[in-house]
Length: 197
Image 1 (cartoon, rainbow, N blue to C red):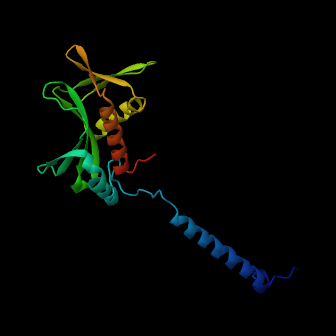
Image 2 (cartoon, rainbow, N blue to C red):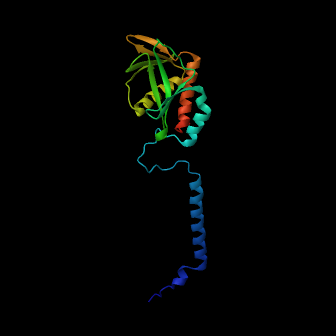
């Protein structure tokens, strides 16, 4: 009959040392790597699309906001920021891109503000090679952000923009200072909501 092994033979002192070393090394490796994990799991049901951190909000308000005209809306608890280099007109149709800070919710939004025209908007973007017409309805924050994201590649390509007023196309965002203002607004917004590339 085969002899049964003694339990002391299976867990020899050398094997226990090896198990301790591997155990401590693996725990140490997990702890070390957890310090460098910049992407945290979102276990809440909260939508973080528009969330801004306190540090990014303070940076914007203290450093970047000097380039903007500020309008406080105490009724809504929001602050509207329109770039100082945007086109301003009492009669001409314009389209302003602005940043809205909702401090009570720690959120930031982009808004396309029609000036001297109404929703819905029909915008034509064109370069030497291509052209596209966009139809935009007034909507919620997510829809407006989606509209801006559709226009963003065209802004980066220095496209020409026109907006339809009645049956005629009127040029918008044509001056270099207006194009620079659009780029600055997008950069500042992306920094606010931590969407840097």
